[in-house]
Image 1 (tube, rainbow, N blue to C red):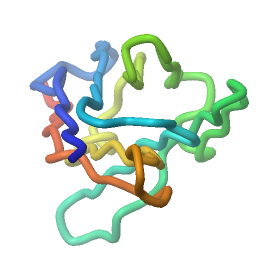
Image 2: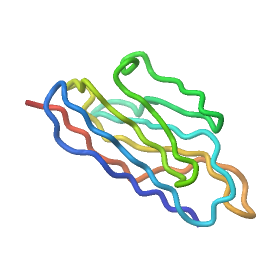
Image 3: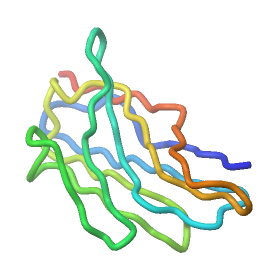
Image 4: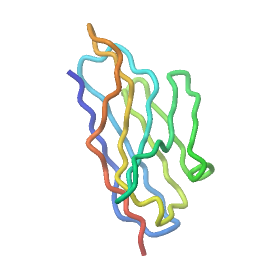
Amino acid sequence: QVQLVESGGGLVQPGGSLRLSCAASGSIFRINTMRWYRQAPGKERELVALITSGGITNYTDSVKGRFTISRDNAKNTVYLQMNSLKPEDTAVYYCNPDIAPYGSALRGYWGQGTQVTVSS
């Protein structure tokens, strides 16, 4: 059994910063690529950033230079540091790590989502 707990969302003014966290726990054998998605009202869920098990990162164009994804393998946690936030960053943010529990195949898991609202 694997559990994901997200935290760090909230209300912030334009230009501000937030740091999201997503901690995985349970019977975990291995975690491969970890991703952050977001979904704004009326829009499809989009991939924001990913980090491989080797530390390679990739970002959607709209957040490059403003967001930084990182991971702490000892804590089974992925982070998303969001700086210079804009109103268009407003969305529910979801983590999506690929996890192999002991005795089970690797598959993607979803966090519960955390609301990020950028508004003055």
